[in-house]
Amino acid sequence: MKKEEIRITVMISGSGTNLQAIIDAVEAGEIPRAKIVLVISNQASAYGLERAENHDIPTEIITDHDFADIKDREKAVIAALDNERTDLVVLAGYMKILPEAVIDAYEGRIINIHPALLPKFGGRGFYGLKVHQAVLDAGETETGVSIHYVTKEVDAGPIILQKKVEVRQSDTPEILAERVLEREHELYPQAIKKVIEEKGW
Ligand code: GRF
Image 1: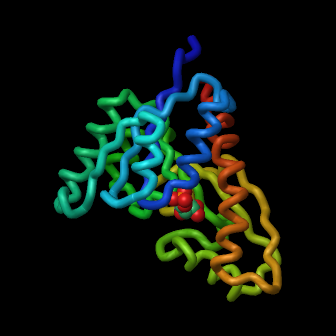
Image 2: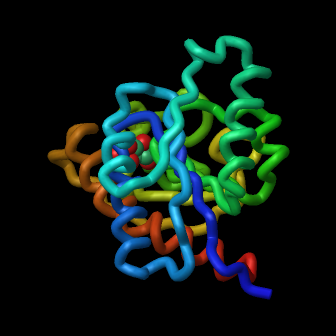
């Protein structure tokens, strides 16, 4: 039996341009039956929260400050996901490592985007502009985007989709980040669609 709708929770920390790309793809019918049921942020000031509100998507803020004990934080995240009967958790610029209890509770149903060609330039410490700086320092001629399942090992879960992006001699980390981000916006909706198809939902 196919699911009537695929209930997606997106987790963010910041500007949420990937969230916006996913919202737009859902609204354009590019991810059939998908519905974004919740946006969770670990930052109260994340601009992505406004993007969600502009599209009448419920939001929840779960900060380390309010939930200093990791046990309370993981309970809060799992409760939020469960309350919305989440099928798929999409990490989109979520700058925290998810507590293991959340990964256990939603095993095989959490995906993440990373702005490089994993397994290169991934793992702890490779986030934000640091990734692009490392790519430039290594003299790479290409980098890219990876979307993968989240497992307990950071940035090491099975790859769902990857796309290459060229590195130019004149690139700074900021310019490269921008070129990669454009590809991220194209790729994330496609990856979500692929996951739904592969799972037979
Ligand atoms: C993206 O580059 C993503 O790969 C990384 O954080 C950035 C988030 O951007 N993990 P945005 O919040 O979606 O605009």
